[in-house]
Length: 143
Ligand SMILES: CC(C)(COP(=O)(O)OP(=O)(O)OC[C@H]1O[C@@H](n2cnc3c(N)ncnc32)[C@H](O)[C@@H]1OP(=O)(O)O)[C@@H](O)C(=O)NCCC(=O)NCCS
Image (cartoon, rainbow, N blue to C red):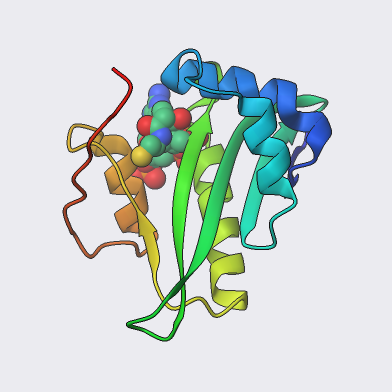
């Protein structure tokens, strides 16, 4: 069946939730509430990859105004393809599409963070041109 990539709708919530569970386990808050809010925000973009009626992956991006650059920058926040469908080029397609939108919107920089051990994802990001390495430090409040 054909792979389709399109903007997420509220009706994709259930399947996006399953993908988030694969990635992170259960949520610390309400995914539904946050997703509803995010979809209404013009600075949020979420793409899903669908085969038939199954959402097999998604990627999302936030744009934010940066005073120092005097421009909008963007950050990829979530990127996941369901386990059984990995290694088939779906992640590459999602990432290519989001990079295209990033360019069309003329955001100034594109950021993404990854755990150091996640070599596969890092290799993919670099292959598609996201290759300036920086360090992101994190403090988690709810452990
Ligand atoms: C990162 C991720 C989204 C990539 O999605 P994907 O659909 O597997 O990506 P692709 O099929 O386009 O493959 C990406 C690269 O991984 C390689 N790969 C090979 N077998 C693979 C497998 N079983 N699983 C994953 N990647 C594989 C591919 O060959 C490709 O490398 P290449 O372009 O040099 O050939 C996916 O692995 C994933 O969901 N990982 C868990 C969540 C995660 O780590 N997200 C990123 C957070 S920073």
